[in-house]
Amino acid sequence: MKSTLVVLALAVSASTVAIAQTPPPYQPGMGDLMVTIVQPRHLKLGLAGQARNWDYADYAQHELEEALETVEKHIPKWRNLDIGQLMAATVKQPLEEVEKAVKAKNAVAFDAAYRQVTEACNACHRSANLPAIVIKVPDASAFPNQEFRVTRP
Ligand code: HEC
Image 1 (cartoon, rainbow, N blue to C red):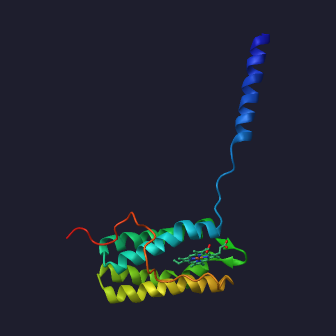
Image 2: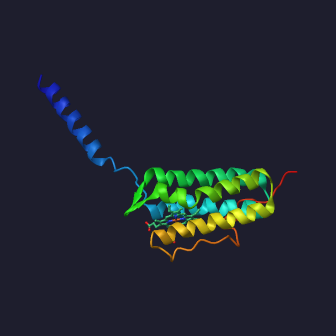
Image 3: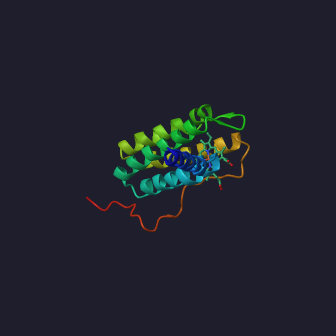
């Protein structure tokens, strides 16, 4: 009888310790999401388009779209701003233009639409009172271990 109680007491205190040690879930902030999932996908899409690598550009366009949707879903409000509304007013339309250009394998249309996406990133940064965050069309790869050119016919 006594030993059963001791075992029970040990089991209870062990589970209490386990709960106390569970770290809080990781909740990246807006700036974290921007530099980790949005910025690299914007860059990769730009490099794919510059290389006229339409198969990869198609993939990269969707990944960038999804990254922005993830931001909107997890941070619906940033300070006093409605992020969904701002996404709709800035990047949504130009991203659809990129998608069309990629599907049509139209280099001139891609370049124009990609510049618009980039300008839309900055439009939102200005709306958020962060005009110092200036995104540009990439002029170099930050991924020396990835091939962006078409390697297959
Ligand atoms: C709906 C609004 C919105 C859109 C669209 C948006 N951003 Fe942002 N971005 C923000 C906000 C707000 C911050 C500041 C976050 C903070 O400081 O916590 C930010 C910060 C950043 C930063 C961090 C700057 C730094 O140097 O650390 C980068 C990089 C960035 N955005 C890239 C992009 C790119 C690339 C796009 C377009 C594909 C984009 N953003 C589109 C709202 C937006």
